[in-house]
Image (cartoon, rainbow, N blue to C red; front, side, top):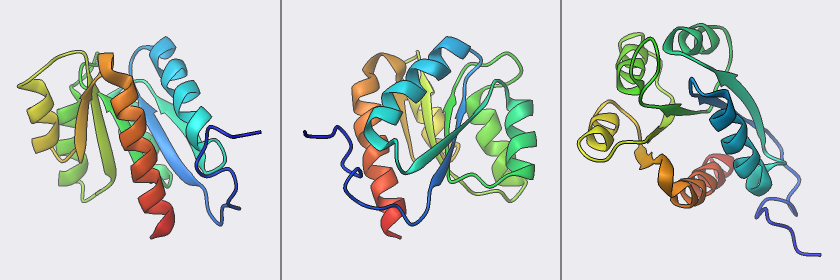
Length: 138
């Protein structure tokens, strides 16, 4: 039987911690489900629902990748990334938004390695899986 994960045959030596940040719990659940199908054996998923909870989690826990929404109740994803950078916390960050340019550009300029429209989640999933593969190899 063929697996959906390109990592399923490998025995992971480490697991990457992925922090999913979105103020919509249903969207966090959906993204976690879609990502888990592809990288289920190499990632541990944690969740945050705001900029504030993101800072608290990152301050107290190890995180390899942050996937965050642009529009949240307390601040934008770009503001979160800028504040993390000012705090000296450099993480691999991938931005998601329901908006087009210039919001995508703002997320990239704020230190996201890439930003995607939520409507194109297949592009995001492929990029995410490639990035996880790179981190596992490093």
